[in-house]
Image (cartoon, rainbow, N blue to C red; front, side, top):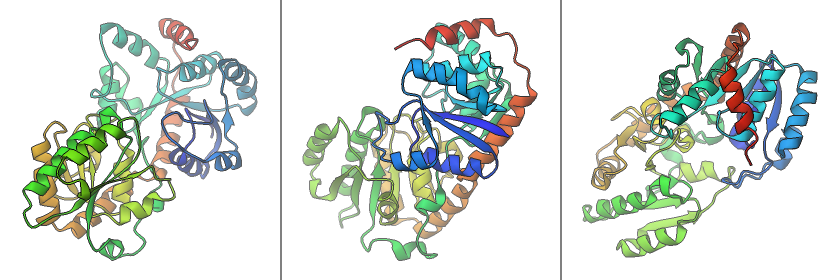
Length: 379
């Protein structure tokens, strides 16, 4: 099949998915912007080598899609979401060219902004798509709640290149630092709930009289100063380490040196850092607000889930992981579980969704088309 694949901006995750998909199909890679405002990816050379086409302005985007997309003659086009203007511009052009459309989505009920009007608009917009490739079961349930056909939904959107993060040695503990620590990896923004993590860590140390693990947090963001103040006030400033932004190439060794991974977000569409940590063979503590928690975490087997509002509960789980668990067994369980969520799952899911889209008829969907045309022209 010939499939056009659109993302906001191709980063390492997207390039890995692209490579996997190209093992099976002829893929045209399209992006809205060369740089992502939220992530400091530096993969321009890799994108050039992969032939990624950047459509940076609305005029360029509409003109290119209208003139060049027919030359590629895709059997289907995969579009990320249905809310941003660049995605809706692709919807409008694809519909005009009668190209079947795959909705790629990791929105779930916990992250969706919804009221009666918004849901009305969403229902008509998703009706423009012939199939969907979503992250997991909670994301599929959200789409079906809006009226999307359950038998047109495939799982496997949010994956990483497991091999990139895999342990360097068969013995998981052989690559671990002699003094294990908790690791978090997140942007320093409100929804990542790092304040709760610092508070929980301080309570964990208070209740561990003979010492305990340190906490290492990789990342940067606007809340850095606030978190630094909280670290200083915690009483455990020397045990909390903010190590700054780390590149994709640096991350595997950061994961491998840790004893366990913590993902405390209030809410996350998925939480790809959990995939990365599990692919590195780590036990994981994952907030129930993360879309991946129901799919990737089996309580007591490869880690635990927790209420992101409950710092005491998280502190208790940190004690459990550090002192009362077979972490090597948990790490092996993480590896077994995440093996089902590699880039090949994205590639096979994209194939299945494309076949579904090609077999489905495009209905009139006049209201959805009007919404897509109007909303695609927003700044």
